[in-house]
Image 1 (cartoon, rainbow, N blue to C red):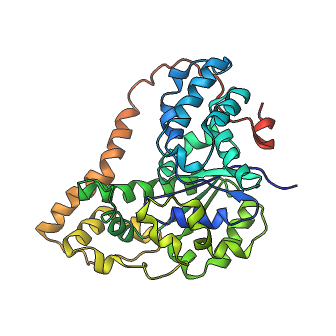
Image 2 (image 1 turned 45 degrees about the horizontal axis):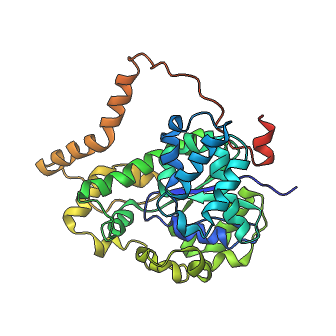
Amino acid sequence: MSSDRPIFVVGCPRSGTTMLQLMLHAHPRIALPPETRFLLAAYQKRAEFGDLTEAANREDLARFIVTSSQFDDLGLDAEQTVEAIVAGPPTLGSAFGIVFRMYSERFGKPRWGDKRPLYLRHLPTILRLFPDAQIINIMRDGRDCVASLKETPWKPSEFDTLIDYWAKSADASLMAARRYPKDVYHQVRYEDLVADPEPHLRRMCEFLEEDYDPAMSTPNKLASVAVPEYKTWHTLTHQAPTTERIQSWRTRLTEEELRKCEAAFGEQLTKFGYQPSIPVPRSAQMRSDAKMLAKHRLGPAKQAARNLFRPAPTEPAEPPIAALLTKGQLKRV
């Protein structure tokens, strides 16, 4: 029997998540939308929507979704979307899933999901909303991610913030690989995928319990359909997968930027198969870099240790939030 489990593409920003989204979107049974902004925002505000067994509250949630940033990129009618959410199961996950399902129905495809890099750092939330979800994480050399991030029009002003994006994504990837079973979490390296797409896409399809389709290896043919024109930072998605950006950090990062990256990432690079370029001399400069490493890596660990000795806050019990749209989700009812 064909799978109907939702699919979520995650990774560090500028790691190839859009390329991977297009590869999966090229499959005859899978449709993944352009990046949206409503899921995490609505989840954080979930208490404000009240009891979703009340149609008026479901409509409030639906209005929040259809007026959110980038909803228009989905090509869905806002009023039809509101009506579908109000008529659907009374859970938060169902409201989100209905939007993704409506997007897939635009293309006549049964499997749906979503793509957003930030989901990598919120996987417990994604799996709470969609307990039968399958996660595909694309990993890329942190130096290339940072080099690409610093050239985007939406980059933060602090270079350290770019470093932090990858460092936290790498930590989340390592944790997910340990935490989730093989039928829930799958990881692929950007460098491997662009160098030889087919074998890696075949393994991805095995994970998803789908047959491989050759169209997946030419995702650029769908870029004009699934990538909004205003997202000029995704220009390369209109070209066939290429290895030309592998190790592009060698020309896109200054020596100082490279040193900061490698000092902050530490052994994270080697854990994913990437080799540091700079030897580690015992010097005053490296002692300074060690402080940066502590800021990026040890600070969160110290905070987590402190939290162990704090009493857990008492929170009111929440109503069910998991989606009720697929066979696996309905079995949990």
